[in-house]
Length: 227
Ligand code: SF4
Ligand code: SF4
Ligand code: FES
Image (cartoon, rainbow, N blue to C red):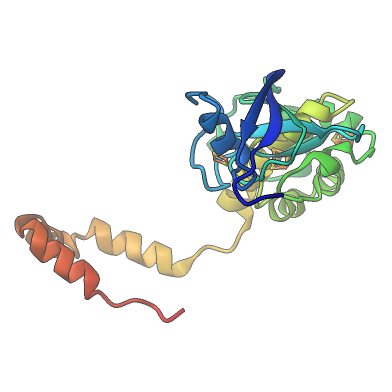
């Protein structure tokens, strides 16, 4: 393929010619779409740009983040900007970090079939089936650790035959783990106490009083941790 040659892709059923080096998100913008939904960080972190696609000649349904996945010729694209999965309301202060908490708030998690479709759909390559198995066992910390890189894109829930909302179960586990089970970060506790005591007020007040050029100079000269 010549360097400047365009490739055909289908966005919401309409054919467009786009440069082959673009991500799906940039290809959509190249094609004239103004994205006000299904876009956020553009860096693979927020999970807003979940996309389903198929490539001509291959029956497999594929999944990716529009801001990270590069287009391919004859790609048929559909976005899932929001997936309406079950989302419980709870007060973390009133919950106990015990197995029954997961089962009580999301009782449907015990219906998981262990089919692994969610794992196949996850653009973060998480072991979604594995963290769901941990949730069924009530192992809150295991769910929290296995789901740590979840970006809440919703693709796992979109594919689940048992209608689970895996990522909402996982964030409940991470909240319980973070609040009750993980070791306390003592340096953070110390720093919060220092802030409350006003240790940094004078420095911040001084910073707010200097001009922009001075701020820029200080920023450029700041101590940076070695890479
Ligand atoms: S897709 Fe649903 S039923 Fe299948 S393993 Fe994942 S959570 Fe369980
Ligand atoms: S676990 Fe589900 S919501 Fe989280 S990143 Fe993977 S597919 Fe997206
Ligand atoms: S726009 Fe945030 S992950 Fe793609």
